[in-house]
Length: 468
Ligand code: CTP
Ligand code: MG
Image (cartoon, rainbow, N blue to C red; front, top):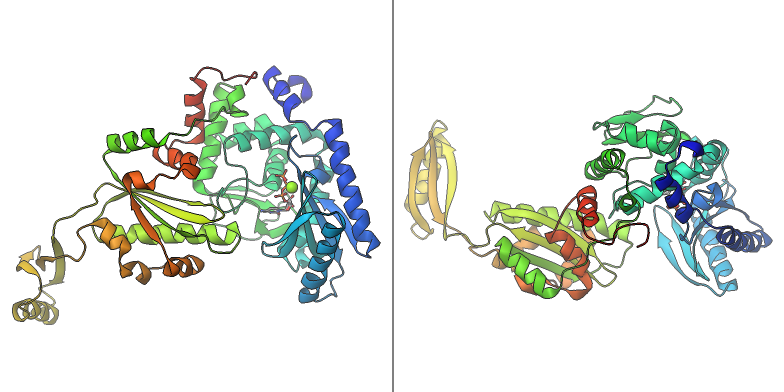
């Protein structure tokens, strides 16, 4: 396999393979932690990419699992596990915080290493799992047993996905996890075979390495977990991320280049350039911002997505045409962006009533507008296509007024987002949407392009190459 690796890929590999020094260092950190846990009577193991030798040089991420007997009740596991993890982190003088995935764990910085200390159950069969993390030791075993010939391929695939901004199963990325990348490389038999297969992926593509053939999934890409037929490892991958990968794969096969692994990255706009670009587009930009709810990203981000979608619908219902929306989360503040094609509408709006063949309703409708002298009726009711129409006054002629109104609390906002917004939120328009700390996000919003297209644009700028 290594023999037919292109010089480009060999050069990339020499950059992304962890050095012996790096390997020794992370193994030493892992060994000390495991000793410290086991001294306290609990079996521990390294999982994730460090255990599988599939981490990319420069990553300082270590996953350590603390294995409890399944007879320990769940609350006890959490209580004892977290307390043990805190004790160990403190023994190393580490800064740490408690985190919740589906399951609480401790995240600690030990020297320069970002360590997750995760309590889980030691079970004999992945299908007997009690919490999601119980699968992880099985993943490690499965991958370790199969991956040997493909480690370089996994490194290339991970770096390729990272460079495209589509690596990570978190809610913000909605992309490819490390384990998924490993399974895909294994299934297709290498990095290039994966790209060749991906070039022809269709929505609903099913990969079932262990031929479990048990459950139907309806995600864009389905990769049945070899150790658990009930789980789609690719559930995190959105249709957009899937096709961003497909586009990158096609692009790389057609013309392999360094930028697919190390994109130089576009420079962020300055405030002045942002204002000019907005003026050139001629649209109206609104930003709705509020304090970040005190929960982890994977809880808050889906609520941002839901809130942005609900506000978009509110705007559209009020005839403010929306071109695009996006959201960004920082530790302190969250922001929702709305680009409007139309931000002012006339005072009059068209309102459709019942068809006249529905006699009872039609008569009620006509009576309402005949009797009620103080509705803001401009004209009508008249009949169009067999149904009554009135033209009446509307409540909001300016999108900003609508966004600042109480109506925003009558739509389906995310739970914690709603609490934060009820406390306080602000609405900014056009140039005022600019925030220096969000320059990159706002630049990406205005200049939106898929990862492949962005790379092709970058490649045309001077200075892209192994030397940069
Ligand atoms: N895991 C999982 N599903 C996820 C995230 C993680 O099953 N969405 C499990 C996998 O078994 C994974 C382990 O948790 O290997 C550790 O997660 P993580 O550190 O995110 O991934 P790695 O495989 O270690 O990859 P990386 O090189 O990016 O750290
Ligand atoms: Mg990891």
